Length: 194
Image (cartoon, rainbow, N blue to C red; front, side):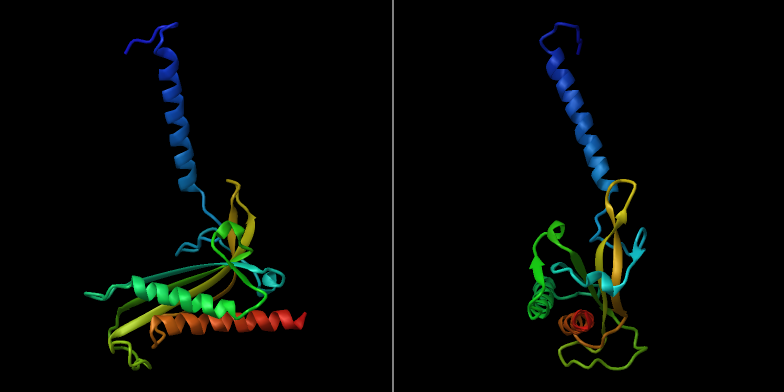
C-alpha cells in the first residue's frame, strides 16, 4: 500500500494504525495490573493488616471458588452455588453488613477457596455421611481490604483475617459456612468492644 500525502487513504490508515497501537497498549496495561480484592496463591504484593481495619467497614464483596480434582468428579456448578448461598446466608444475618455485587463498590472482600481432592488415607474419617470416605476438602478463607498504592496506581491487597485447613472432614458447604461464621464471630466481638 502506497501512502502519499494528500491521498484519500492516508488519514484512515493512520487512524487504524493509531487505534491498533492504543488498543494493544491498553490491553497489555490491564494484564499487568491487579486489584486489591485479588490474592494470588503465592501472596505476592500483599500487605498484612489487622482485624481492627474492619471496624467501620460495611460493604462486602464475596468471591467463592470451588474445584474438584478427584477422578471423575461430579458436576460441581450446583455445589459452588450452594456454597456461595451458604456464605451469603451467613453474612445476611449480620445487619450492619451489606453484600455488594461488584468489588469496586466494596469496603472489604471475603475470598473463599475450596477444593475437594482424593485423599491418601493418612487422616481420620470424615464426619459427614454425605462425603465420600476418600474425599478431602481443603478451604482457605481470606478477608482483604484495600492496601497501599502500587507504582502502577492500583492498591495492594491487605490481608486482615485468614483461616485455612487442608482437610475439613466435612462437605464443602459446611466447611465454608463454619469458617465464615468464625470470622463473623470475631468481627462482631471487635465491633461490640468499641
